Image (cartoon, rainbow, N blue to C red; front, side, top):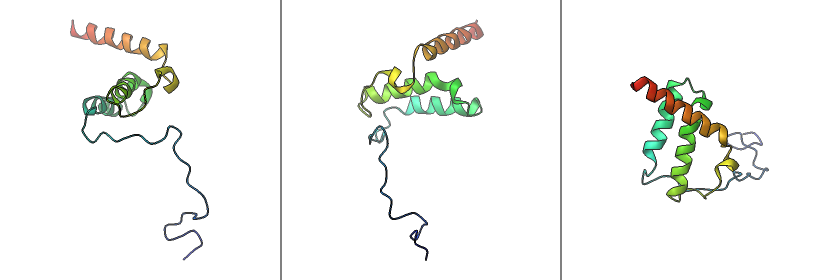
Length: 99
């Protein structure tokens, strides 16, 4: 066996905690609808996350509302006016398609 341990990891290094800390998993499936919308969007957009940012924002807002993560200003999470503008233009596109 090598000095790295049974699974090849370096046993001498201390693990680094996540930047935002630990947050509860959604065991009660409180934000499943938002999560599924986002994942479906990613799949249909060829995993281009920028096309689904509005749904990512919606999912994070749901998690904050249900106390599954700390409440934070969306601008601190990388969402600003550009995301809101993208959402509005997509809503207009969807409305146009419906007509």
